[in-house]
Length: 231
Length: 231
DNA sequence: CTGTATCCGTGTTGATACTG
DNA sequence: CAGTATCAACACGGATACAG
Image (cartoon, rainbow over all chains, first blue to last red; front, side, top):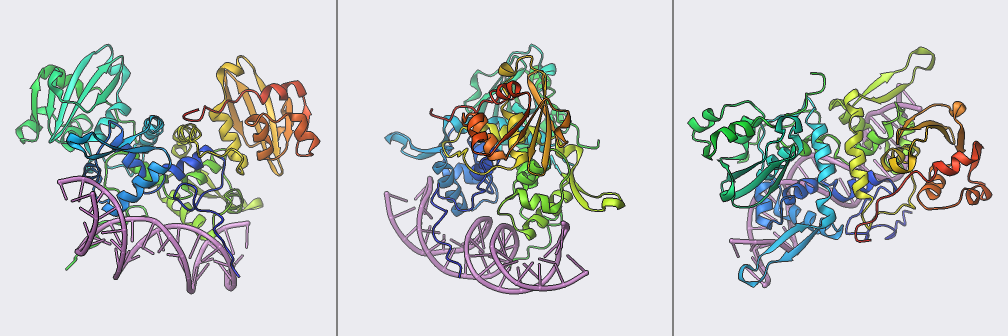
């Protein structure tokens, strides 16, 4: 017979619910679909446009990105905003609650990075590496350091503030920074997490350092990847 | 033309990788598939058999459960063990690293529960509510309470130890407990999170209390759901 | 230039029935 | 009890084509 009517569906645009009161189950419904959590990660430092998201998420197709943005909007994780007339482009921006997903996202990253399957040489978006800094900074190594560090990944500028053993990050021109890394995310990762000397990247033309060189040398030692499981 | 050779695949049985060095992306590859994280949750208090998992995860089908278990085993999240001859059944058990996923799982739950879409009246597995206790216990409310509390959900016994503002949980007969709840997960949830009086559940025949009644009354007040976003 | 909608080939998911 | 086989439905990603 099979009279499966319209019983489910129409909850927030998604079908297939777990029917489980557990918060973790709901989380997987909200951000568990392929790409969703990475979209949230990309938005973590401020609103982005469709094309910026598409460029940062290599492999996603336009229609899938549209679907995910719709789903996340319906779930209240992000909102679509139209910037005022001069530059009347549309941006996608996390809601206040959406920003609170930073903790779960970092916890997942901290856990997964210990997998033997983790390959730190894979490509990395700018938002990824900035998130990794927030996740992996060692309060012990940072000590009482208080410094403003800037980054320019092509057209994407970031300004970070190391203080109180933590690091705050926002998208901003790094003019006020004491030191500025002009490079790409993978090069920076190879230095911070792969032990590649700064001079090596400079010699390869992959990095230009501006400002306080000693501070830059110190900065790249502040982050520690947890040991791989079994190692 | 399209000469896409065998470049990828064969990593751990899964296709479709994000090709992203970010830990969060890897986490979603490891446990982001539908059902995977709920399977891990069910295993959080010890190894379980295929049929127990299938029963706890309402809606999952046998072939999907098989696939997920294979995937999680290939990723090193769980192992398949054959219990010694007397009861030579097979169980699935988290690896040491698999158990470490408790933190990300709790963080996700803590976040998602603030969604307006969260419906606490949905069904709940025994493992779910015990995990929720670990997630939602209020150190402030628990204060210096030190107590052993037991649960019997049909054939599933648990023993919890409240101490130091936290709660440890394991699957064990609650004989040594000072108080024992004999009920089902949803009834217990309605009391702890829904404010339903214990007497009401008892009158409805949904709960039998054993041991120290005053302790039970105190226990059910130890847990606080975070406020919904916007509330 | 910034998205959105549609088609299409492929792969994944899931319900049912079935086997060791 | 612990899965496998089959098949239908859907999701994914690529390539357009289209709209503001």
